[in-house]
Length: 120
Image (cartoon, rainbow, N blue to C red; front, top):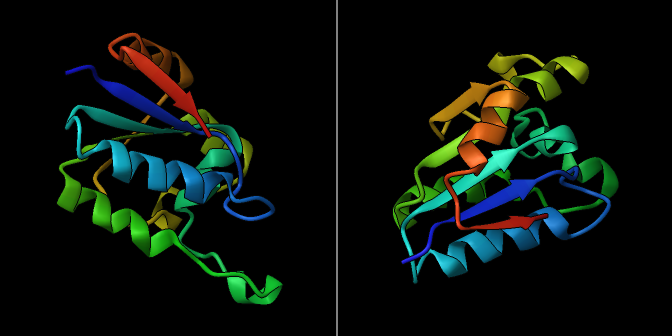
């Protein structure tokens, strides 16, 4: 079976793209277990643990990421460069996942291992 990378590049709020990417990863996991999730640019905010969606009367779906482990999705990569650019600390990331924090150059190298890449 082919392996698939999901790249999250958008903030968790303002559009439904992040949630749609998460739902797509969960759906596709029934066909393949070789799935990687990558968080770059504003996508690193998807895993920011200090989210307060109530302020904008929205639903916080951050905890849904913990379900990914139940679907055998275990490869998570987050851009260290994107964290630095946004002034975020590693300590403020969602702790439920074993996220590998790597440079953009290392992310590009990892992405070459995937047959299909979907961007959200």
